[in-house]
Length: 482
Ligand SMILES: Nc1ncnc2c1ncn2[C@@H]1O[C@H](COP(=O)(O)OP(=O)(O)OP(=O)(O)O)[C@@H](O)[C@H]1O
Ligand SMILES: [Mg+2]
Image (cartoon, rainbow, N blue to C red; front, side):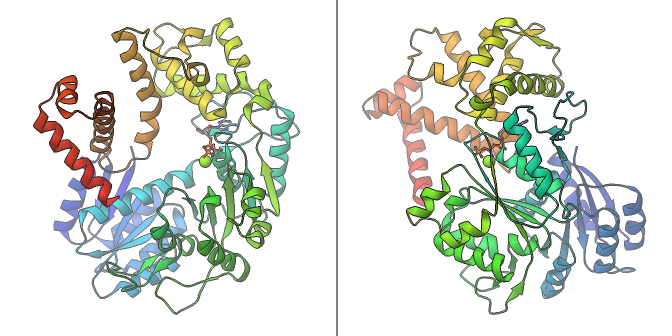
């Protein structure tokens, strides 16, 4: 359970925050005095600290300095009163993760807290890789993540990681989807000289274009309507540390120009700001696209590409290192057996054959999901070949020959395979979002099947026509705002 430490002399606020976080399933510790807080920090580790800037006996900056001295990776969110935001920004230069201006809204609190906790998880999770000279691995016994594989191609990857991790050069990681680009990026961070500094991962494809620049470079208060406070961008927040830019091919040309400036001059300006800010970040970029083609077709700046690809790590698809498949399978078996508390101990001979002979178009991610699913559905102590539903074998095949139970079973398996990952995102409203998505899909499909006849679709779904109409209206509104 993740542990949050709340430091504030305002009893009312402490009470509200404790309940807020406890309800969300976090362990909470509170402290009303700055001096006591300093003592607690020396002996107890936390995943997140919320600190009031203005405390009677000790000021926020002093406490922050002490926190950073004893638990450097724990994100600290500073709470400050309106009118003193410059202090908070000052504090961010000394390692605070972010700030909240009192009084703040629950929504903002949730957003900042879940983002900070995710960063905390990524920074603290150690990812190891084998020694390139002695790649033979015994399976890990702890919960530590490991890069698995003894194939020649993976040994070359380990060697390269070992050679470049400690330096400050930019790294470009390429490879098909699911080959382990993110894992490698995080391993590089953990073995770099910047491992005590922030690590921030940004998925360039996941954030809408118009928000992306402000996420990356920040903005000044009043830069645009709705910019109510100065926002420190991810690059500035990551100063001194490592910034992982995933799916970099999706970055707009405009943002690419600004990123190049960060790399070349170590400079940026927040949106709407005139002050030039000095930053020094190490960039690790990843893409599953062919970057040469992106450059040729003018979607990616050649000068930025040259700058990023000084060191390129090319991750091989799983089918080109088939000797690693069973090693990976055993690794996932031991991890998920623990995670789901199941006593599944081995793969049948046929299961092993099936794993080895499949082409794994979705690479390690597909293998990982196949094993997770197999572990969840098996009732015995081993996994047989029938426990694997491999996507490309399934593709194009109609499922209409299956009976109701079998179809529902398929659906359950698919959900089982993906929902744990969604839960790991620990975002707000996960329950509502997933239910809504399932419902939307169901309704759209039913309508299609009934040639858009609402009366028939409602009947097919067993709901009233009014309910269907109401839902369609909601879907329409959503699509207008998205
Ligand atoms: N060599 C490996 N050893 C152990 N686990 C691995 C390895 N490679 C990948 N994985 C696991 O497979 C999953 C997919 O890996 P990752 O997210 O790093 O892929 P990716 O290349 O970034 O994919 P995408 O392009 O789709 O983002 C992760 O859960 C990761 O932990
Ligand atoms: Mg990835």
